[in-house]
Image 1 (cartoon, protein in one colour):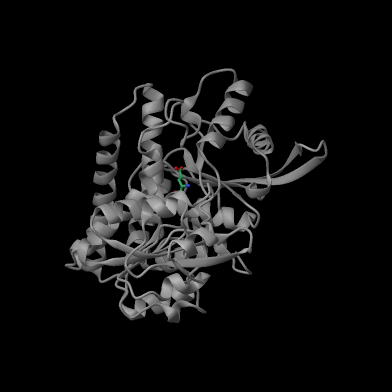
Image 2 (image 1 turned 90 degrees about the vertical axis):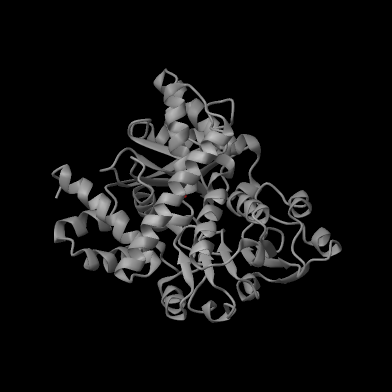
Length: 428
Ligand code: GLU
C-alpha cells in the first residue's frame, strides 16, 4: 500500500481535464481550477524525547475557496508529498461541491511516521504545524480536520495552539474534535457510514438486497471500520479485510469465507488500523497477500485505505462477480484501472461522493461549534443520511440521463458548481 512512483496530482488534473472538456469550460476557468489557489510548504522543528532536534516537513494546500472557507484534513504519513496534498486538496473542492456544503477544498500533511513517535512528539508536531500556518488558516479562512493517522486528540492540540496564539476561543477553527470539547457526535462514524449510505442506494438501483451481498474491504482504520459495521447491520457479509502490517512493512488480506467477526477483529487491531497477524491466524483467518482483497468472490469492493491501490497492474484480478466499487479512500483507483473498470461495467461510487460523509459531518460540527449548541447523535446521522442520499441521487440521475460514467457525472456536478461560483464572484 505504498505510493510508489505514482503522481496523485497528475491524476486529479487528468480527471479534471476530461470533464472540463465535457463542460466546455473556458481557458481561464481551466487554468484556475487545474491548480491550487495557494500553497504553504514549511519546516516544523521538534525537540524529540531524547533531547535532539528534528525537522519535519509540513504542507497546507488551498485549492479553491470560491464556495466558502477551505476545508480538509491533515495527514501524517511517511510518504506524504506536496503533490499528494495538492491532489487531495483538489478532491476536497469537488467533494464539498458535490454534497452542496458551503465550503472550499484544502488539505494538509506532515511527512512523519506516527508509529515511531511518542505522544509528546506528536503534540509538538501538531502545535508546530499550526504555528507555521496560523495566519493563513482559521474558522472563516480554512478549517482543518483529521485524516490518515490523525485523530481527535491531534485536532484538540491544534485548536489549543491556535487559540493560544490568537487569544480567543474559536472551536470552529478545526473539526473532528473530541466530543465534549466542541466535537460532534457521529463525526467518528460519519465517513464510513456515509460510504454505506451510498452503497445502500446503489444496491437499490441495481435491485440487490444487502442481505444477499458480500463485500471485501481494503483498510481497517476509521473509514473501513464504520463502513463494515453499518454494512453488516444492513445484513451484508464482509468476507475479507486488508491492512498494513507495520512490523513486516507490507499489507495482508485477512479473509474468512463465513464472514469476519467485526468485534473480534476490532479487539486485535491497533489504533492505526493494523491487525495482529498471529492472533488473526489463531481466530481462523486465512492470511493472504495484500492485493488479494480485490480478487475475492464478492459483490462489493470497498477500498478504504490510501490512493493508488487499484492500478493497471492489479485491476485484472477483480473477480467477475464484483458489481459495485465504493471508494472510501481518496483516489484509490488510477485512471488506467478506472478505464478497465468502466469497460467491464462495474458500478463505481466515486471517492469524492462515496467518502463525503466525513466532511459533511465536519460541516455540521462547525455549525454546532459556531452556535455552541450540540445536536443528538440521531439528529446528526439523520441529517448526514439526507445529504449523502440526495447527493448520490443527483449524481446517479445525471449519469442515467446523459449516459455518463458515475465518476464523470459526479465531476460534472461538482466542477459545474465550483466554476459557477468562480464566475459569479467575477474571478473568471
Ligand atoms: N479527511 C476527510 C476527507 O478526506 C474529512 C475532511 C474534513 O472533515 O474536513 O474527506
